[in-house]
Image (cartoon, rainbow, N blue to C red; front, side):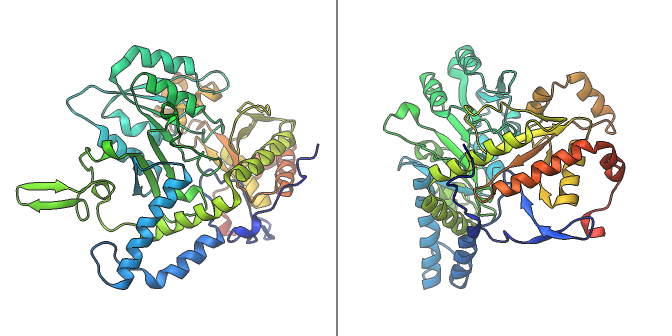
Amino acid sequence: MSFKDNSPSYRDLILGINKKVPLISGKMVTAINFDNAATTPPFKSVMEDIIDFAPWYSSIHRGEGYKSQLTTKVYDDSRNIVSNFVNSDSRNTVIYVKNCTEALNKLSNLLYDPYKKNVILTTDMEHHSNDLPFRDKFIVEYISVDKDGKLSLDDLESKLNRYNNYVILVAITGASNVTGYKNPIYDIAKLVHKFNSKLLIDGAQLVPHAPFIMNSKNSEYNIDFLVFSAHKMYAPFGTGVLIGPKNILDNCEPDLVGGGTVDIVTHNFIKWNDSPQRHEAGSPNVIGSIALASAIRTLSKIGMDNVERVEKKLTTYAINKIKDIPNVKIYCDTSRCVDRVSIIPFNICGMHHALVAKILSYECGISVRSGCFCAQPYLVKLLGISNDFLIKRIKNPDLYHPGMVRISFGLYNTYAEIDILAYALEQISLRRDYYIIKYENMKKTLFDF
């Protein structure tokens, strides 16, 4: 079977898709972006909608001018577009923030009660943003992963049993930004609700790549809180989303206060607005909300089932192309039955991950990511690194910094681009010594040549 059969191309939807970038040789080539898990390029439709709206931009709420009323309507309507996209219902409210990191920090602040010793359960596979914000306010426990890096539902149930009524929130990624594994979030929801706790899904890597149902007819499968970022779904204009139950968020003291958050203020009394306004202090990012709504409209026209189908084919094709290249080690389960998003982590044995990423860029115009992807505890487990080594590295920053190379696809990537990547990796692998000598001590960027 050919993976290339019947695969639609969505490249015409993307701005800058044919931009040329320089190689170290001075040659110009069409850029290949395999770093979509970090951020995606904008849809053309997003840029067009922003340009169309910009002449009408004004302040929102309380302004009676036509432009102000129009801006208010567009901003408020965008919440409905966001809510419908993730199948949320009227019991929830959509709060705009800058990104997932701010959303998770905000939620940790809103749920914090200094008079209670509440427990947060998160996992060994989380992005730092779904871990660090909770550490100074809650007792944090980590659900373990198995040898392949997959989440242990048995350990989740064990910890829910151990802490019982003290677990205020279970915070889990919908899909790993390292291995691409999708977690069984609806099974998790049922389990979490059985213990009368709430479930937060970090949707940064899941919402842009697959259909998402926040609320269903069977409430035991509902997702209580959801966060995701626009810049990972073709709308890079500084907007993120926190969605959660209005009856909870209406009773949380705002963590950032000022204009827009209040209903009545005297020198000795404050009555806060209802959510979402009470949690959106100051002038909002209207343009960002327009960009997100526009991207959602485009993704909805494509269909998230189609997005997922295209990206699964690309991922399967890429795994088959690179898994047998000499010296390439892939750090995730590569079988086709694994439920995943379009992420593949790997290393070339004997080469630093950052060096491999640099060579791909300098020699081929291919953008990938290297490092720990803001998930150091997970990478340490996947790489089999001991705590003793980490302690040594804390004392000696010159020691090797562990990490991987990550490729991640968007719906616009092609099999031809993957072919170029596979050929490049094979050449790098077979000529490791040559490339190490050429690049290892090179400090210049492509702008220096």
